[in-house]
Length: 112
Image (cartoon, rainbow, N blue to C red; front, side, top):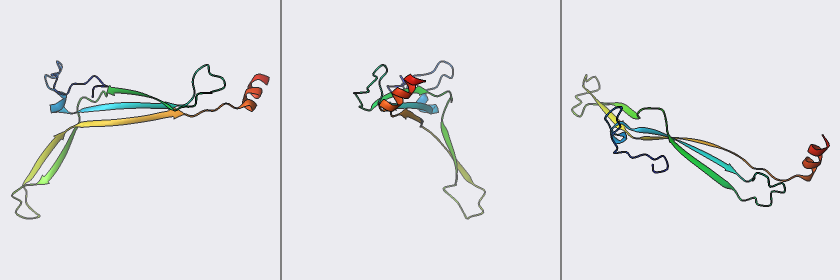
């Protein structure tokens, strides 16, 4: 939550409610790589990662569930109980690439 700069208890001016009471959706972008710009021979092949966390445009996150009432008298009872839960929804997007130096590809690129 700190990576997104999000405080669940901060009151939002637009709705006068908190993310804790409304729920929130977070988008987590993860990029992995082992190539470095301007490093022709790619001598450093350690895997690197970049993370970016943003609050998604979705205004809230909730799950509605309909359950039989606590006092259910049978399978045909007309009493039902609605349960509404709020929470944090994470959406992950993972992208990346692995590369390596190839002398053959270098010669082909220089020849064309």
